[in-house]
Each structure stands twice: as C-alpha cells, then as structure tokens.
Image 1: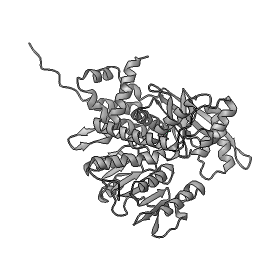
Image 2: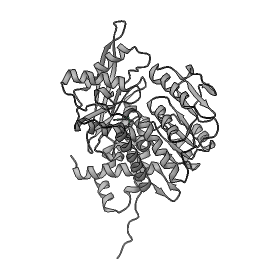
Image 3: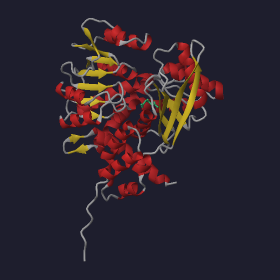
Image 4: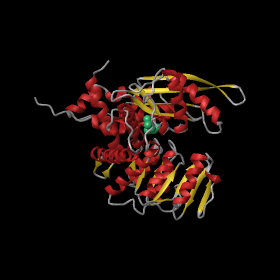
Length: 455
Ligand code: GLU
C-alpha cells in the first residue's frame, strides 16, 4: 500500500520552545526568536542540504556560546580609591574564523546584553563573507563622566585580564558603545607592554597604532550604502531624500556625513536626553559643529545652538515631520511600536538599522504591516566589522591600505551583503531583508558546522 509523502512540519514552534527552555535573558530571547522565525520554515523542507543542517542540529547548537569569560577589573579613581567592575568576553563561535566583535563599556552592560550581541555578531560576520567568527565583550564601567586618567587606568586593567584570552588568530575585539579609538588605543598600549607583540589583536585602533583609515567611519558609511541600495531596489533615490537619524556616536555622526555626501538631507540626531532637529536639514557646517561637540568636547546635544536647529528635551527624533529614510543608530530596543508608527506616518520608504537590534519585535511587526522595508542591523551595520576584517588584513599583510581602497572595498562589501539579503529574502510581498539576512548568514554558518562534524 502506498502512503502519501509526509507533510513537512514547520520547526519554528519547536525552536522557539527550545529558546524559552534555555532560560536566557529577554534580549537574547528576542534575537534568537527572530532567527527561529526565519530559519524554522527553511529547515522544514526536504532539500538534502537543509536536511543536513537539521540533522546536525545546527540552529540548536548555535544558541550556546563556545565559552563565556567573566572577570573582575580593578582600578584606582582620581581620589585614590580602589574601584572594581565586571568584565566579560563571550566567544560565541569561531567556525568561520577568529572570534570577532566589539567591546561595550556602559553601565547597562549585562551578560544578557552581551549574549544577544555575540549571537547577532555571528550572523553579521557570516554575512560579510570574510573569515570572521563571532564574539562580544565589555564591562559595566561607563567612560562617561570619568576623567582621562580614570579611563586609561580602567582600559589598562581590563586588558591585563583580557590579554589571557585573545590573539590575532584567536579572538580580535574592537570598539562598540563607550569604546572608541581612545579606549582601544589604551588597551592596545597595555597589550604591547604585556606581550611585546605588535600584531592585529584589536581593531578600531588609532591610525598611528596600525588602525585602518576609514574604520571609524565604516559603520555609518556602510549603513548609508545599505539604505541607498534598499531605496534603489524599490526605484527610489538617496539624492534629495530626507533622512532621520537617531544617536550621536560614531555610527550616527558618520551616517549623517555620508548621507550628505550622497545628496540626502539630515533631519535629526539624538542622545539619551533629547533630539536636535532641523526642518531644512543640517548644513555641512552645522553637522561639523555637532561632530566636534560630540567627538571632541564630548558634550550633550542640548549644549548646541544653530540657526534653524531645535532641541527637543526627552524626545526621540521620529515624529517630527516627513522623511524618506530612518536610520536608528543609537542602541537596542530604542524604536518601539509607537516610534515605528511615527516612522511609517512620516512616509519612510526604508529603515536601515545602524545600531544592533534597535527595533523591538513589535516595532518590526508594525513596519512589516505598513509595508516599510527594514534593513536589520546584522546586514545594515555590518560595514563596521567588515572594515575590521580589512584592518586585520592590513595588519597581517604588514602594508598600510589607503583610505580610498578601504572605502571602495566597504562599498563593494555592502552591495554584496544587500544582494545576499535580496537573494535569500524574496517573498510575494517583495524583499524581506530580515528573513534574507538571517537565512544567508545561517546558511554560511550551517555549511561550516556540518563540514566540521560534531563533538
Ligand atoms: N561593535 C561593532 C559591531 O557591532 C564592530 C565590531 C568589530 O569591528 O569587531 O559590529
């Protein structure tokens, strides 16, 4: 008697149950659940390659980092009082290359925050096409409000511990929120004292220490390249487009600079206390002044005044008139459902995430319902880590790259990432970038994990 072929079972509910059972924090759950929604249906068909991924339990195994390192960081404040913070490095997977991902120094850092970032980083790094594994680290130390000397002593002490676990072919940290060239420089200085090895063990280094020209700009520039490709995919243009940006760190500021370079108008920036807006778009000079304020004097946006520029205390930048592009470049979960509604009402034709997971699950659902395309952080902000990959190449090649070469390679890489998302994210309603990014990243990781066997 012949039996009908078994109907494929959608694995998504089982994967989500498994994530719940792990008992990890809410951010990790949010990030992993998003991936489960993209991967579950893909694992359910009878394609032999995908059957291999399923049999090898690749999705499940990837939920657990290779290891989590936790340590005490002691330092002495300006009053001579001993202080201590908690330091972390999560080495998630090195199946594609050395663990790679930034260090975040911020009072809100917890294992949950770094756990979700390390997980996301694996997919992002896979999407770049470079040989990079995934990791993340950091501390609940916040450089904000600390003196130059305190920041230096903290960074040195952090590296004294971290140096035991990292190496140019092993684990290569970089910056993230609260960690810029200054902090990376101090950490690299201590690494040199400890090891006597001037190698590419950190990226995002200041240029005199072997940093790559263009690395600082890369995440913001890459995000604009991705947004531009999204617009063009749907027959729109960045030229003349109004662009709302949140945040005022490296990512936001260089996204603003690149937007102007591409002919767009920058309507806003923000920090944790409020937003600055300009109805006509900032002038080049105003943007330069804002960059100096944030990067040199490290002041709040409320301290800025410029012609036609308004400051809105306690407000996010999404509900301030019409714009075509939204670039959330501040931090995770900054865009909630109400903000997403404001973005859709503003007429946005593309949202590209410069930060990591800035849109909540509810915000994403709303944008999908209102047919606003969303470029997820793991694709749209991959320019930063991609450029870090080039910095590693520069350091081990022992020949400096020109800034022009680095930025050209960045543009090519972002175009390729966009194409990968399009190829994997086609639906009957157009391109679903989140689906595409998760599936393309996962496919790369899964093939490698199957090839390497288990155990
Ligand atoms: N922190 C950045 C990110 O979230 C860059 C990481 C790196 O360059 O290693 O991707």
